[in-house]
Amino acid sequence: MPVSLDQFALNGKSFVVTGASSGIGRAMAGHLAAAGANVVLVARREAQLEQAVKDILRQGQQTAYVVADLNQREGLVDVAERCKASIDSGIDGVINAAGINLREAVDEVSFDSWDLTLNLNLAIPFFFSREFIPHMREQKFGRIINIASLQSTRAFANGLAYGASKGGVCQLTRAMAEAWSPFGICCNAIAPGFFPTELTAPVFENDEKREWAAQQTALGRNGELDDLFGITLFFASAASNYITGQTLAIDGGFTAK
Image (cartoon, rainbow, N blue to C red; front, top):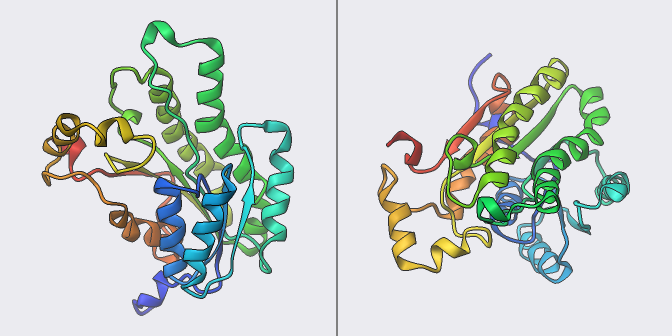
C-alpha cells in the first residue's frame, strides 16, 4: 500500500475528550478539531466549556459539550449516553484527560483523598471508555488515549497517591490494548512533562521551580500546549494503526536525563 498523508486525516471522525475545559484536555480537543475531527468536550465547568466550544467552532467542526463530574460514578453511563447523543455520527475515540493531583504530604494522605485520586485518574478512564467500545468494535476502528505522567515512572514529593494512579495508567493502557486491540481499537497513553496547566500552577507560578523543571529536560525548556499537536494527531489517526499498549513521554527529554 502506498504511503499517504491521508493516514493522518481525522475528517469525519468523532472524539470525546474529558477534562476539556482547560489544560491538556482543552488543548488536545482543539488539536483534534484542527485536524478535521468532531469533538465532544466533557468537564465540570460550563462557562469554560462554552468558551472552548466557541473557539473550536471557528474551525468549522461539529462540536458539543457535556457538563459532568466524572468522579460521580453513578452518573457515568448517563454522561456517556449524552456524549453519544450530541454528535450525529458514532464516537471513534476517547481521550481521558480529566485528572486530579492533591499534592499531599505522605502523612496527610487519607482514605478519602486516596479514593478520590485513584477513582478519577485510574478507574474512570476504564469505565468511561468501555461505554464507547461497542461502536468502535463494530466498525473495527477506535482510539483510546490515556494521560500518564512523569510520575508514572518517577517518585515526586507530595505525590504518593497521584503517582500510584499514574503508574496504574500505564498498566491500564496495556490491559486495554490486550482486551480491545483485536477489534482494531488502539489504546495508548502519553506521559507529559511540565506543561502550563491548572495542575502544574504551583510550578509555573514559582520562578525557581519553573526554571528547575526546564533545566531537567534535554531541550532546556518546559512544554507548550501546542507541543501536543503531533502526538495527538498521530495516536488519534490511522497513522498509528500498528501501535497499541504504549506510553510515550512528551517531556522534552526530562526522562532521558
